[in-house]
Image (tube, rainbow over all chains, first blue to last red; front, side, top):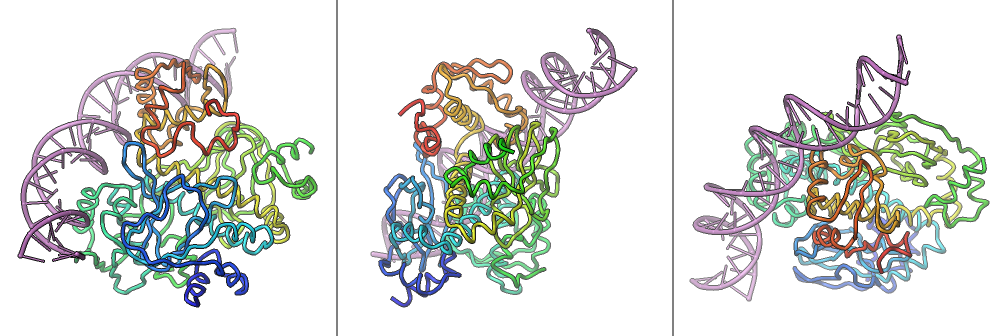
Length: 246
Length: 246
DNA sequence: CGAGAAGTTGAGCGGCATCAATTGTAGTGG
DNA sequence: CCACTACAATTGATGCCGCTCAACTTCTCG
């Protein structure tokens, strides 16, 4: 049970809250181990829980009538989802599937909803989280309209490099390439070709899911020229005050 | 001054608040008439105000280094912007330009920030608003990856028709076609061609900025087949409980 | 070791962008 | 009030990026 609280206290909406509130909210928490491919809920299901990723990865997506799917996000340890259902609409606006086996903590939405009516701190905390998510989603929307597929991959690699903070930068792709391609809004074939185009233009070595860069600078020049932000992206810096470059 | 309060009380974040809070927050409000093309602020400016549109239209956008711009949103009467800057980051994450002459009300962020620390109702209200915005942005992201340019236009027309509620549906494009094209993530030429393609496939008559449909059904079949939502889109229904179809 | 999925590579195609030319429209000043 | 100008909107020609379909290779796991 302690490990649940441990993870929860690292999740964005609980980060800065007093321990007693976290304890209270985690009373009815459950954790479950899931295999890859497990569907947690689908679009339109009545929402009764919100979730925190303890390990593994979760894919949030939508499926159109003709079968194609749009990946909205891929979540990792400490990420939270289903928390944006505090209001009138009580059905999930996306489906959730385990993309890589792991443990998921589920908590009842009713508790959280109740708490937000009594405790301004937690409301503010959720507001901060969702504001950040909105910003991220707007960025992604920008990227889709201004960057090429190749640049979007480069951008993803740069952001991974900043987060993983290895020097010289060696990136480990966090999940398989099919999923990553879908997340970046392209086909697997396009991803594969675009990655090898990156390899030629910039000093990049690829070994399976490991990618070695010599320097971030060259790649960032190529990639960030079609983005409104300056490298390294400010919005990442929030979580990485000691980012690689100032 | 009364007309300011009148508009404010219709804005999403103030909708359900007690009048005295609205009065208090509007004390330091100013309204200004602006001509088309006026820049209210640009990406990176230090944020000191949030805004409510009293009339006209406002374009929120970002500009990349190589000059192309991505339109994030186009706002109309009662819409609010700049309110997502309550936290650490205090520079605007987008630029704002008057797209159609009108009056804009500006209010100091510090007042709002202060109020959110004292008043849970307003925090909840902002949270509700931003949650809704996030959902809208995620939808747009989905459309960009699943729908064709032609379908995106059809989708926009349907949504306009639902909002404007005329029967038989005659839509008035709310702003000029260049802006609309940019908002829908395509070039003006593409927009023009795609619109005339819609005209051929579905029963549509076009007169300048007026578009006459005979029925929404046919268009919705064509358009919504590449969307995860069912027509009429649920998320619009929230604001239109008496939508055209059940 | 074999089956099935992930990943890569090739060929061909279509949608959208780009460039360019023309027409339509609205705003400005003499 | 009209002529002029600037920009919005349309239409055509062309090219490229990314999608689709298909074959093949590599990887993963029972």
